[in-house]
Image 1 (tube, one colour):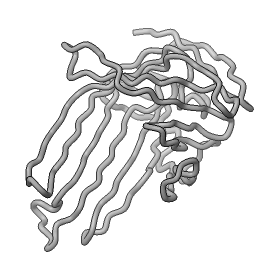
Image 2 (image 1 turned 90 degrees about the horizontal axis):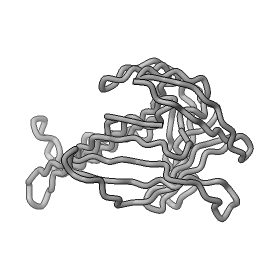
Image 3 (image 1 turned 120 degrees about the vertical axis):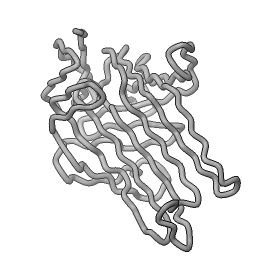
Image 4 (image 1 turned 30 degrees about the vertical axis):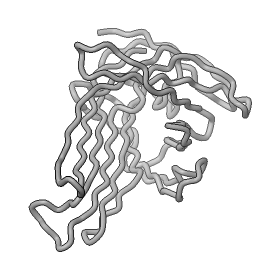
Length: 229
């Protein structure tokens, strides 16, 4: 499978293009290639969401698919060229896509930002280096949260894909067996963008129960199944 790629990388606020061909083995040499910005780029995820309620003591499991499309660009109120990201949802391949959210994103010479549900997060910072840290909430009103590159520029196989260059952003890793566990991570590949996301927030039981440790929790995962540039 060969797909034509067109990239627009931002240096000092200006997009420029770089072209190439790829199969599901991806190799692109640029920090900015971890965050595609070309209009028409789309990526599809399988999503698994699990919720355990402390009130009902029931565990509910949801499975669906999400498609994220870079639909167009526009100039924001800071004068920056901004991506319009349309988010579509469906139960499975037999159902039609339905748009349900619109997000935005910006790629600059120093970072990659994404506004999700009107909250702006600094997803990546440049240049990329192992163990490099930054405040992912620096551009919103939430408490400071230290992000870190826990892996950088490494080859990885994932869900049938072979990626020559990937990185892992550890967004949260708090675990206190007497209170709660918070874990968040995103993984990126050059030419693709984010191919895996995991978020877990759990409240531990007291007294501790090793067989069923959480009184309530939310588990959410997005896994790449297809992409097109």
